[in-house]
Image 1 (cartoon, rainbow, N blue to C red):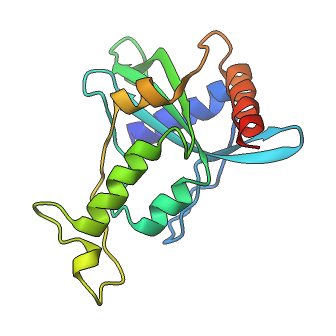
Image 2 (image 1 turned 60 degrees about the vertical axis):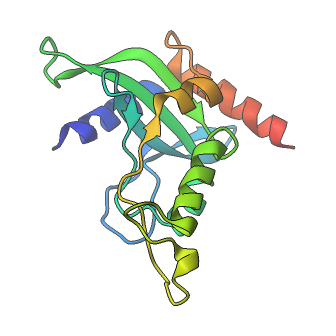
Length: 173
């Protein structure tokens, strides 16, 4: 088991989530779900090292993957390396909730890179016949989390997550 899986398993535990079975697939599958008032909400789990301050996302991020990511809630947890724990990490207490609206600046930036290209990547708008094309692990900077996402209460992570998902859902309507 890799450390990222260990961190994700710890997120599932501390937030009271239900993990999705791990299966390799070309179809996007969220990491976990949480049930609120008999309704399941899909969750994408991410962790980031406090020293690096960047959230790793995925290989081959495509327009379809971005569209799939917009349908789920994101939970970000900051960690630091630790020799005092058996898993080699410790969460710092900084946890954030994001959704398609909060992460819109980052999603828009990735969509633009995919369509217009970068110095090393030819954009889809320039390839008339292109059906696929993806970015290799575009990172989400910590500043997106701190400026646009909701910081969760580390004293009651599950309750804070539930309350904030409910709040976001109510304000969408």
